[in-house]
Length: 154
Image (cartoon, rainbow, N blue to C red):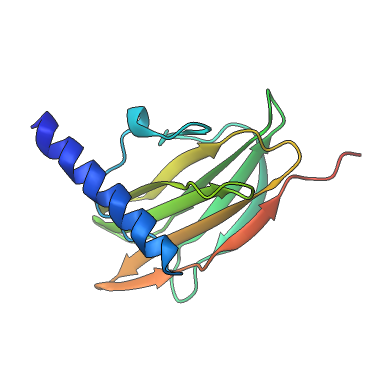
């Protein structure tokens, strides 16, 4: 079973990288495992630490992405995609440090309420890019890529 999960995770990550390289968004359908996060990334976790920063609605759905920021350590962004649909369906969130090419995601076809929280660190001076997707009646609804920057220091 562990080998099948590792293979599924590797296939999902390869698909994520290939899809992103060609200008699309991630569409992986394998649950993400926190111990597989690349350096500078973490998650998924059931909540996001930090202060609420922004909400991004996903067109033609009740779905939305919530982004949080914490200045702790080197600064972190956290993102989660939510929806209000009944039952299990595809929900996804992807987060990328603005200065890096690596992305981290949480995506599965069997989520009921949310995907994420996904963290990216070393964000005190930079922004992050976030993408979310919710599938409604078999039709994927992407948010598109959004750039989120940390709040200005008062």
